[in-house]
Image (tube, rainbow, N blue to C red):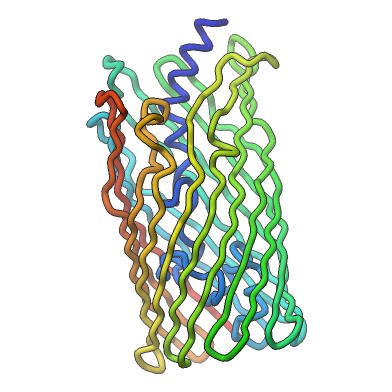
Length: 382
């Protein structure tokens, strides 16, 4: 059992750190849900532009400008060139689905529901040093969230809201020594938030997403049943929006993500007995984002943004996260919305996460990543 535990431990330490990150560039968290959020580099806590706010700050539903109903449906593509010890991953294009609906019951109450992939990708390494010789690592991880919720306007200044988080997570790992087939778990959490607008030009937003409590993964293998518990981190976000005119919006957000609660260490059990403890060592992360939105004519709105979050993985933890995708720090975003008809608009965004690499303290192991993300969104409102 000890030998098996060591072998499985190496493989998962070298791969699962990578799989916790996908459709995401702040650790294992994506910058946004919809193209408008991505275009603002994730700065949307105080002044959201679409129904996707039900997933990030449900109080924002009550601030959206529409009469009865709106839908914001879209998808994106993620291109993440990455390396582990100079080895390129062969998989480099992934699909990102997203969508949200909102219904205004009356002047005070707005219901919403959204769905998005929060993480989910994988790696396809043919060989990872420092263990050369057919040491393939092929993995797939997906994490989706469905969030029914509401926003309520208390008065002209205050709104608040809440959403239930229904989570789906799947994972598969295939290596030269370990074959864990695709399996899935479900979990739950909650999101609560508020906005406060003291005057016509300022609005503040606050949101809290609880830790997502996931059921254990279970894999039946020839030598027993393996189990592992992998939850998703809680986070707290604050945003301040400046709206000097109907044509201009500037928002700055700060977000705390508690990675150390869920990705400091994870136990792998077999038949109820712990066989390995994976000390990934992820630190909590502070994320800073600023976005500018400008309406250049009655039908066209443009966006630009910048997002920074220090990698939750440091040199001391590189060897426990070989192949990890969680190291990008600087991000630049561009966005565009064009009115297509009286009630219909299309939005497009592009985000580039600049190349970043981290080398272990002894200089023997390096992980490296950059990302390109394109999102398309179609919005309807009446």
